Length: 537
Ligand SMILES: Nc1nc2c(ncn2[C@@H]2O[C@H](COP(=O)(O)OP(=O)(O)OP(=O)(O)O)[C@@H](O)[C@H]2O)c(=O)[nH]1
Image (tube, rainbow, N blue to C red; front, side, top):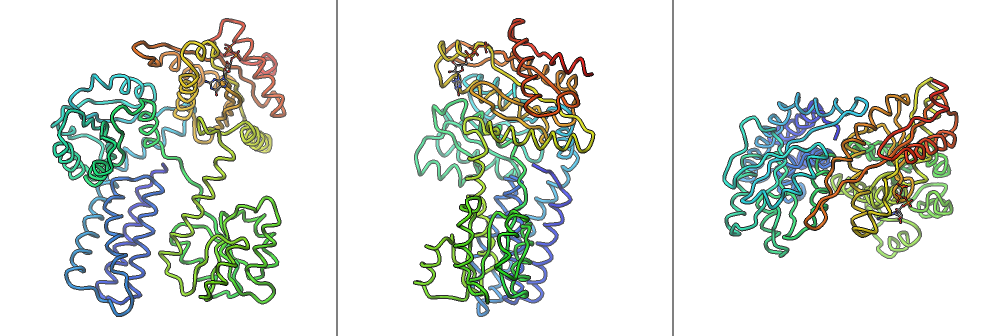
C-alpha cells in the first residue's frame, strides 16, 4: 500500500467541494459531478485497501447512485439532502482520523525502503479460547505480525492504531452475541479490518457477519494456512500501476471529454484521432484497454478491432466501443467481431469508469496468471529471468549494483515423503511469504523451479545480499510448521553472485547456482558467495 494521507485528504476535499456545490446549486449536472468524485474516492479506497473508510464511502455511494435519476429529480428531497450531508460529514471525519495517523503509517512505508528491512503489524485477537489458535498466532509471528490477545468483551487499548486488524473467534458464542460484538467493534473502529473465525458456512449467517461489519469470514475448521494467507494479504496489498486507456476517437472534443472523465479516476489516457495509427499507439503506450469510437472517417471501429486482433500480442486486450448506435443487432455483431463491451453515447461517467475498471482488472488478472506462479504468487521462471535482465541492464547503464541469489529448500524430498505433498507445498508458500515480507518492493523474487527460488537484490552488493538473506535464513529455520500434533523445522541453502562481477544474467545465475551447491555440500542451512565474485571484489 502506498500510504499517502495527503493524497487521501485532497481527494476528500474534492468530494466535499462537489457536495457543497450541489447543496448551493442543486442541479442534475452538479449531482453528476458529486457522484463522479464520490465514485473516484471509493475506487481510490479500494485501490489502497483502506477497508474501514470503504464501508462508509460505499454506503454513501450506493445512496447517491440511487438518487441519480435525471434533470427532473433534482434537487433531491430535503430528507435525502440532509441524509447525504450527514454522511459526507461523517466520512470526512473518518478521513481526518486516518490522516492524523499519518506519522505511524508513513513509518510503516519508509521502513520498506531499506535493504532487507522488515515491517511489524499488530493484530488483535478477540475470543474465548486463544489457546485453540496458538498455531495461527505462532505462524503469524514468523511473518512480522505481532498478536495481542484480548478477552471476548475487552476493548482495544487506547493507543491502538486507528486502522487495527482484528481477528475474532466466534466459536462458543451465540449468533446474536457475535453479531452484536462485530457491530460494536465496527462502530468503535470504523477503519478496522475485521476477520471473523468459526463463522458457520451458512448463507444467512455469513450475510449477517458481513452486514454487521466483518470484512472476511472463515468457517469452523478452515485451514490454518488459508487464514494466515488472508491475514498476510490484508497486511500487504500490492501497489498497482495506474490503469492505461487508449482512446480512439476522431472528434477531439469527444476524446477530451472521455479523457477528463477517466483521469478523474487516476486512469492514464492517450488519444489518437486516426485509427490507422492504432498499432503504433498500442506498441508505444501499452494500454490496458482501448475505447474505440464506432464510426470514424477512414475506418470503422469494428474494422480497426479486427486489424488489432490479427496481432497475437493484442489478442486479449479489451476493446470497448463508444457509439450513439442503439441498434442491438449491430451491437451484437460488433461484439462478435472482437469487442468486449458497447457503451452508447451520451454515456454516464460513473458507468464508463466502472466498465473500464472492471474490464482492466480482469485483463490484468489474466496477465498476472501468465507471469506469476500460481502456488506462491511470485514471478514464474520466465518472468524472473526477464525481470533480472531488465534490472541488470539498468545496473549496467547506471553504474549500479545487482546481487542475484539462488535459494533451495534443504532435504525437500524428505519433507514430501514424510508429511505429504500438500505440506510440502505449504512450506514453499511460507518461504515465499517470508521473502515477500522481508525484501523490498523493488527486489525481484521468483519461483525458479520446484523448491528453488531466484532473487535479485537491486542496488545490493554480494555481502549486503548475504547479510539480508542470512537473517531470512535464520528466521525461516525457526518457523515451526505444524503437522498433526507435532511441529517440525525446515532450512534452506543459498548461493550469491553479483554485478559488477558477472556480466550476464546467465553468468550470475550459474555462479549463484554453483555457490548454492557449495552450501549444500558444506552441510546445508548456509549461504555462500560465488568464488569468482569474491575474487572480483
Ligand atoms: N510439494 C512439492 N514438492 C515439490 C514441488 N516441486 C518439486 N518438488 C519436490 O522437491 C523435491 C526436490 O528434491 P531434490 O532435488 O532431490 O533435493 P532435496 O531433497 O531438496 O535435497 P537437497 O536439495 O540436496 O537438500 C522432489 O521430491 C520434488 O518432487 C512442488 O511444487 N511441491
